[in-house]
Length: 378
Image (cartoon, rainbow, N blue to C red; front, side):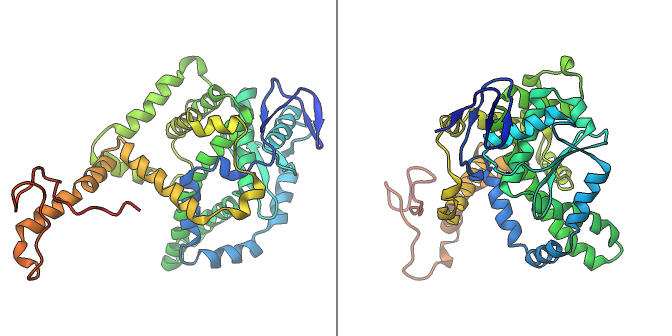
């Protein structure tokens, strides 16, 4: 079962001083909060031609020590003496998600609100001054939990390679084939990372356990520190309008707009997180029923693929996007269309082969779909 945390105690070296009681999740597996699209995108990425070669090469070449020294020398490391309130949040987040080793965290001078978890051997969390100044305590707690979720899921390795390859692609843009090869992997990494952000948002909610704070944080990232001018319900309505609005041309533009981005659109993230927070899965986790890390080795890859496939099927079926609705309509009408073609071109069938007949008068059917052969639902 999950555990309630009491104020001001020491737990396994993690000083815990929360502003209120929060549920703790001993031994929690990252599978608990990972979005199905995140897992399937990562599997697809690993199957991308040339990815393994690039990954192994970069794992040995990337300057891990140089990266750490850079932040150590030109950023402020969070500790009891520096940004102590962030240090409390970090230890609190690691305790809630049962991450044994607290990753080093740095505050970097940058007016752009941003945070990232990078590193190959061990994760490093970096937050910008723009983000620290923008968010209140509970909003920031969700962000710290978001980054700790990245660390627990092992996302920092792929994020580091994405940063390096994005920089490399710019440098070798003059080499046509070289740039194409790199950009193919960069595009795959971006697709995965956008999905991984949905997973980390869930981890942030498990740490902060305050949906409104998570919503406010995303809203501020989108619209700045003008909370009195913004409304969560209206912000979420934008996500619905974004998905459902326009025609097929707009659907294509949405795809083109998101391709160069490393993060999903903020309204979409907010809507996805709210949907998960209202789900039975989230309630079960809060009740203490969730996958454990010691069970990860027994997890079936096939089960993960099935979960991902079910997610995409449900997403396409329920989507209000014009392109997704067209796909659903075509998929739903494919059997009827096939029957009509077969009946219209019966002369092309082999002798003895006749189109299947439906109930009622031979050669006719009671309804357009009655004479379809049964589908294999397995």
